[in-house]
Length: 412
Ligand code: SF4
Ligand code: SF4
Image (cartoon, rainbow, N blue to C red; front, side, top):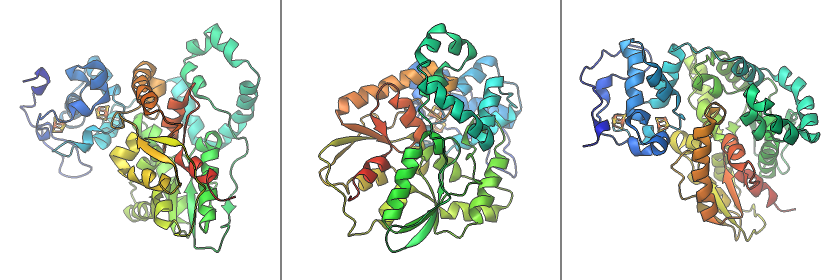
């Protein structure tokens, strides 16, 4: 018997009679099935770094209303929110929701840097003002000398700076008409920073949708999905309400997301107006799934005699559970060899803002993922989540969204 099998869950606590599901400590069976799925257990090999131990801490916060120790807090914060533990738990612990509730209750005050980052992802006008300066900095050649001074590290922005890619200064247009006879119309969720830092993927999405007969609308009033706020213990209600109002006001066949991290958050939107939230979720679809379902039989792609390895983001594997659509969509490219990365069940370390808040843990997990990438011997790696792609692609220039490969193979 492993030591971590005894978690001291002898005293079951009272569950609330209404409201969102909150775990009763007694609901954890102490089975240990979640332990081997957990990336932090993989790194630290300690009982405290297991989902079950965190469930115990969450229960103290949410159910027992007792103070937790600094150690318990640190182990809780080490969680990547990959939700791999949810997929195997026989008690169906809603770990992601419980974690968010617990962090909200802890009333975390963000650092000045955290406040700035949250402000920037909330506020489009701030971002638009900052982008030209950022583009000049990235072009100036100052990056390397500035890194050497150590100033970026002192300011706590070294990790974020290392991830910066060249931003697109101009946003997307509001409407892109179908290139063949119109079959329908869809709205595209672009969120916050992707419109500037992953515009290539969004353009590929639009090109593909237009090529199979769909008009694409990109409503400018949309905003951040709220995932970073929620996972960091901050209220996301106003961001959620805005997106629900913006997209529900449109007459569309579907609302599509092209980043699974955002998609996972959007797919679980709750709102005081349950009907409005329900309508939003009902029309929401992952773009890979939508393209696959609506791909015309006579739409041929150019052959590509290369090999691509598929990275399956946690948000796709553990929440949306539609990773197979990527393989099926890429299979439409003649002669392309498509393979899964060997360690797909293990989180790559990106974890939303985790790569910035826990850079050492994140880098260790990335190293493990890179070993699998090397072993795959593929020409490219694809990931349907922008955050994972950016994090894995540092110094690699090999990871991109599957839609970029598909769009390049459209007939000329
Ligand atoms: S969400 Fe991921 S990192 Fe967090 S406890 Fe579960 S498996 Fe571990
Ligand atoms: S899998 Fe679920 S029931 Fe089993 S130890 Fe983990 S949290 Fe508890």
